[in-house]
Length: 233
Image (cartoon, rainbow, N blue to C red; front, side):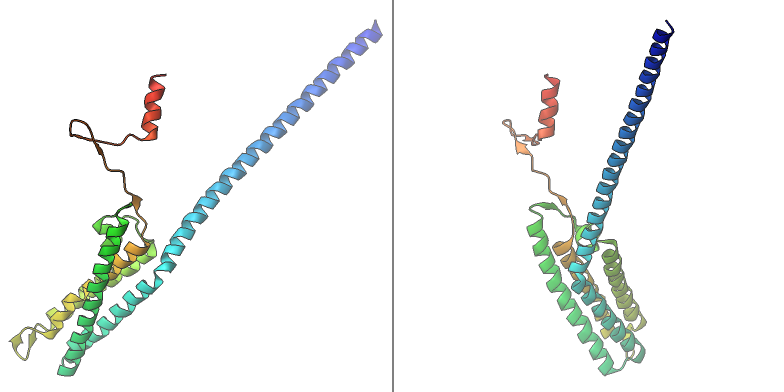
């Protein structure tokens, strides 16, 4: 009898030890699976962040030449306009006019080029005017947006400021420095050219299909069809 009781106790103890071992193994597997899942999620987040940063970096470096041209043109205009406003001799005024007209001509060409490029991209992308010429709504990297818009603002301020400061010439109304008001076209054109070539836009939605009664009918997407089918069972 004592042998049977001892054997039963040993069996119960063995079963308890087995359950403890199984529980520890299960917890270890759960912890390992949770750790693997968290590692995978973190890896996907890091990869997505890296891809987003890489996209912004590629966009910023692709149009670096246009940004550099914008800064150089703005600096040349600032020097020539301020010098003409201070010295205001005939030769300096001529230099100021030439610089302003050259920058204006470059801006007109860039503006027309950017408009043509934007029309081509608008077949597949949804492009707004504010995005194209003022780099708004996330169409460009933040650094490029600040740099080019500040250059445009500087062109406006310098052009208006120097024209107002020298509003007369030899006592007569009018001044050659008024040509500086045309220079912001240079900044607008380069903004549009950069954005039309390297900007990121939302894809254009498909146009609504006309129904049999002549009214426009939106194109049903696969998600809508799936939802309708789920309601019908």
